[in-house]
Amino acid sequence: MNNEKRSNFTGKIGFVLAAAGSAVGLGNLWRFPYLAAKYGGGIFLLVYILLAVSFGFALMTAEIAIGRKTGLSAIGAFKALNKKYSFIGYVAALIPAIILPYYSVIGGWVTKYLYAFISGGAKAAADDAYFGGFISQTAQPVLWFVIFLGATALIVLGGVEKGVEKVSKLMMPVLVVLSIFIAIYSVCMPGAIEGVKYYIMPDFSKFSVTTVLAAMGQLFYSMSLAMGIMITYGSYMKKDVNLESSVTQIELFDTGIAFLAGLMIIPAVFVFSGGTPEALGKGPSLMFVTLPKVFESMAGGTYIGILFFLLVLFAALTSSISLMETVVSILCDKLKIGRKLSCLLVFVFSVVLGLLSSLGYGVWAEVKIIGLQFLDFFDFISNSVLMPVVAFFTCVFVGYVIKPEAISEEVELSGKFRRKALFNVVIKYIAPVCIVLILISSVLEAFGVFKI
Ligand code: TRP
Image 1 (spheres, rainbow, N blue to C red):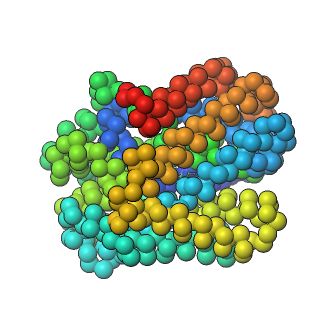
Image 2: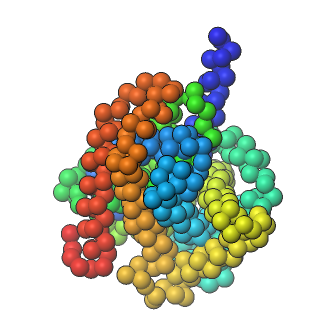
Image 3: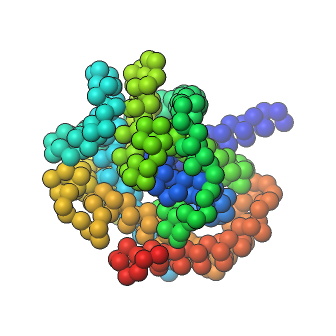
């Protein structure tokens, strides 16, 4: 009895950590804080949490259950359940291919910052102009991007993922502890309290449809939803592991780290840049501009900075590895080619797309697609368009084709489904309707048809 319980427990911890490992990455540490800062602080946080416990919960439960039920990854799983709907799997499979290149560009920035801190450039990095000066160059950011992508490709090719996973499992707890430490430090800086207020207290006048769309895109991105990843993870999950409580734990873990990242960064924006709309609206550069200043003001900040960027680099690598692995294995299966060739193709494809993203901040700054730079455009297409589309069809598929009962049966194999009623309502009515409304309004807005 005792033994059985223990092995059960290990199985669950293993699953939760693996899924959380995919979920926790640059999305939490880099993307969440800049979106929260940009879209009104507290109101963004509130919308995000509400979406996480409704949409996020329902979608993650559905995806993991579909995977566990069929024992297949996305393309196969949708096909196995209903041939007509296999297109959802294909669209889902496209998303990691769009994310990987620009994810690696940001990964390159992280690598560069780690190098700068190691080579005694911590002071220089704290300067306002440092980041802009770096990304607007041509060769430098491309070099770091290719180094990051190359490392990812080598790991995927050499199959040393297991080693990296192991190291990162060790490093994840350190990252959590260090984040708590830096967050406390940030919050205690003189003048930080205004920032804490901005981040925690919702200001309803800042609410807009774009806030919801941004929060929804971030939710899918951060939890690796709406691209078939969780279906694959679910296919490896044992039938006796409690599905519902696993979902709760993954969500808590992921949201907790995102919350901490915001707490490290947003109050610091108020301290060092006065919390002006320009400073808060910095977008993708926020973490890179703000954190070096926090480290600079700390005793021993250089070492804290080195440790921090090292940990972020590992979190980013484990995510980029699984992004690339997904694309590589789909290519292997579909084109019937070997792993090496498939890796090479994905690498070349990512270099090309990533180049656009990297140079889009430098020599090609003038080139804009629907008013966005390349990196922001790829981010917009994947997070604000394709992921909501996949999420919508997943809801329709579960709600009306295979029916929510198919999911609850699977969940109930491993225990009571306590939020069954919530799940049914969200997946059948609330989620699909909201997603369509939000998607339409945001796309119209992006193309300048009207202003919300
Ligand atoms: N969730 C990851 C993050 O927060 C990013 C990501 C999105 C991802 N989709 C993924 C990682 C698929 C691995 C696999 O950074």
